Image (cartoon, rainbow, N blue to C red; front, side, top):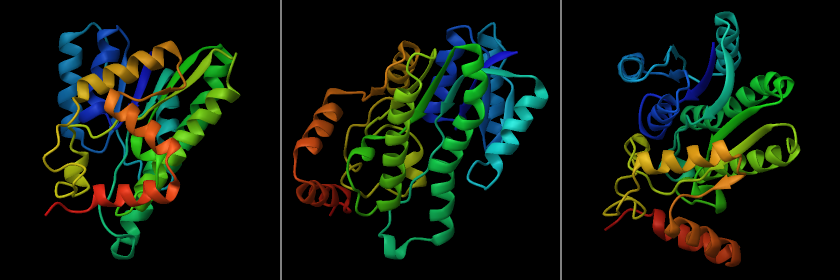
Length: 259
């Protein structure tokens, strides 16, 4: 069965991307940790659209999980035409106070699992001469992030990795798109304990549906990079032309807890 594999599909941007792929008539393989949410989404998709929506429960923050997921996909005979690496976590805390185990799991999920899944699924796409890969990063990828130093660094990895791979694959029929949303209305900020940050507190958050639609459209067109929202694009532009010393100071003020 041909399908689209989506990690972090249980809610937020991943869930919306799954719905968009289903609306387009593509089967979707839903991957996340929470089986209850996945099962509800799978049922909703299969009742609403003429597609299949199998699910696989997998915690990609654990070493070896990406390889096990790949083997499970192979054993089922699934053919992954589109790969959407959406799963990711953050932690809002000064680095000196961070939990080492939580930090390691974040790096495993945000970077290692993403790179490993990409490496595992690309050969078959190249053999077929077609495929689409969407990597979900963040506008955080464009600057250092005091109070979320490791998270920002992991998203910089995703951005640079994806842009390099997009160029490597030019002319093969396989494309890699990097989606860099700004502050979006998802469960991410609750999980990262960010609600007191000036970057989130009192701010108008982007819609997960609109962010997903923007990323989905760019993926299908084979674009290298997409940043949803004019404000976010302006922010990235300013970061690129501002002195790094100034950018990191401004980012720190944005990330500090609101009085």
